[in-house]
Image 1 (cartoon, rainbow, N blue to C red):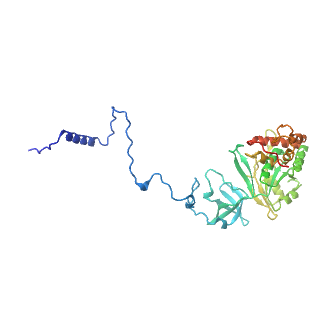
Image 2: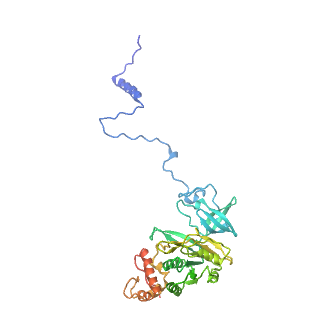
Image 3: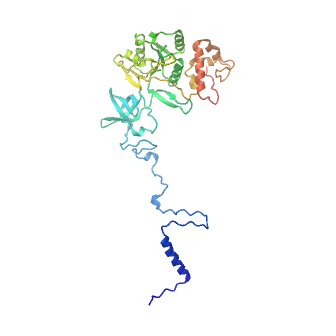
Length: 400
């Protein structure tokens, strides 16, 4: 006898059939309905609870983060950050080699590593020869943890002549800038002198010209230019590392100072240092000859290096030869710092805000072009002012 079948109404029978049908089709991809083009609803997100909130915000303030945590894409480090930086010993950077630095620690040369928290990804280190830094000794090695404020820094701008140009420091904490040049090999370039003179004046650094290789002969044009620079207060040395002429006078001027030797490759910066201090043994090279016949120096110094001389507290930064020296974005007022003769004459200009570019009654144009040096300086000023962004309004003439 068959068991009794439950007495189910048609609605319940259809529901039971639909249940078993869905059970058999579970896991299979759903068939697309041809009756409706409405998009399917997205899956409902699971509730993960309040402890797994998606928009998490830290409770700590900026200065409460553990100091070993590195932010802003800086390289991480597991070593503790030095406390009480003011109590750390101070050493002087002798030479920068990427992230490694040669330092002078109580007269002994050592290698120091830059602390990882001071390294920003993709940005070269701004620490240069002459900088004073505070270091920590870790297992016999030195780590740079802080950089002392600079008294001065000289550098150039590379790249565009607008706000996108980058400042490239050469040396820091200087007392004197010496631009070494040559009368013929490589050629004498007064335009470079004007750029260095302006950069040094902006840093309020004494500036001097050293014409080396005078044994090769000095033309009347070069002599005229040197006399012109003397007339505006620039110190000029004439030397010959081959014959020894002028070496003693230059050496006396360097005493008790940190001086920078800079200039084009091949002008004899390292040769001059060997003449001043014969025991240094700095590498030297000869000037190469280009197709155009103009001599171009060969780099023998690859990085700026702070060199102690025999005189007490006397150092020279021997820098690599430069191909170009850019002033970068500079205002007309700042540019005039390197042109004192234009500042003096501009007080008599009849046109207010005179730019010395053909304005009526320009006292600068009435006087400077009368001499070769003055004509060069006015042309150099116009060239440099043309490379820089102009101010919204012309500057007022200097006060008398």
